[in-house]
Image (cartoon, rainbow, N blue to C red):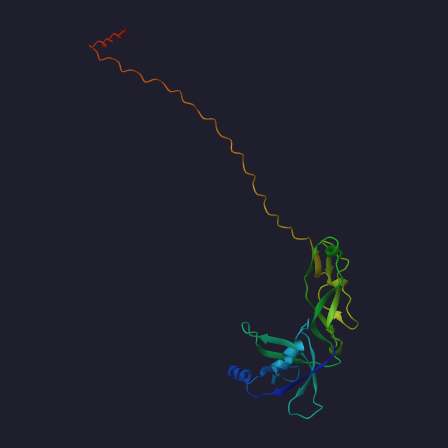
Length: 236
């Protein structure tokens, strides 16, 4: 891995108020670990962000130079941790770890899928990258930028595990061999719009004809004779 140069400044004051003041002045508080004791320093946030921009992994090998000190005091380190404000995404703090060129360290390296899975190309499946980073052990100068994961042979339902990955020379993967790295899932079922229900034929119910009964004549009152009908006049 190619080293990038980063200039840092020593600081003696610590605490929340000091950290706030440093950020207002355009610097970010940091701590350098790995020596006899942690060292309080500051870094230029713009320089740090330029180094990690577009990088897949979080590990970056640095050549540290202390501002204002004589040349020859360069120290090798990695960025161990970055803290960001969850709302503004402003860089708040940096942890640096000093390393030795002849001593192996444990770092995290990005996983990079290679090839087009058969299950995606021929079976319309979906490739899922389950593991995005690997934990590896190697010398600082041998840190790979990423580790390739060949997914071209995966069909739907297949799983690529850590044991199938080929690590670069001098790099040892620490993740369990049976840990899943990538898999191909079946295609998502297409949503089919429900068919509009056919209009039911309206069958007119036959009209029920009610038989009309003639009005019943009122019965004559008891004791009264029915009125006699007048004789019809004959036509002359």
